[in-house]
Length: 325
Image (cartoon, rainbow, N blue to C red; front, side):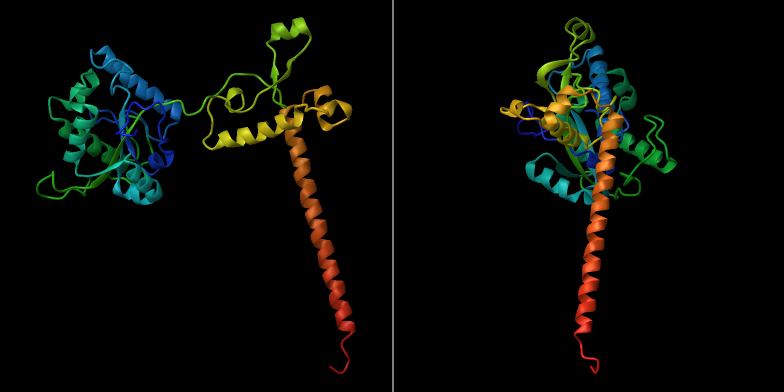
């Protein structure tokens, strides 16, 4: 979240690379609440659960103020691994570089109202102590889980770039010494829609079964869909990076299937698509495999022809060389 405009309707995507590099997610009062390496829908679900807890305890109402704002905290080793992203986020003001646990706790108070969280889980974790104490306990417990190989709170088993504070805090004033952290505010947003419109393998929108039975048409004539609008492509959850692939694959198939002005006068591939039976996914994959094999075969034949031509040219050149050379 941009701290200069926290209520802006659009946000900057927080790269999952940061969580992969070992960033931890914290509640406003400095508690971990999820396995940071979980899927986006899982993490968002845990965020919503925290907001429900707070609302149910008489705290901030879900969706009001900072109730759905959380902290992402990256240590120095993680920042070095993701230096390009971190440098960009620092430049944009989305991350802040803070030294020491005490100052991170002060940031949580000042930015997210961390000392005003009232739900029972928060109270039990704080145990009547300060927010700084609670935050330090969180990081101590995380480092211990990393050393042990599993987190009893979230069942997390991978702790890249840990520890956060074990062996890193320096003697002296804790406000002036300690490890370096990179902190920022994050919140759940609609990043990608799983869709719901049913289409066939050419992107033609399917009628619901009752309508199809009445009309005798399985698809809606002239209506196509691709991208986030359609459902069923990714199953229950989308793998990261597949959104553009989905748009490219189904966008191309829709483009090949849509009739354009003048198509009626000639027999085209689109006619065969529209009049023929719907292809199954396995048939589509089979076609793609055959096309790939054919491409490899053609490339091999072309390379063989080039090699033969080169050999012939070499033989001709040798024939022209005088025998006494």
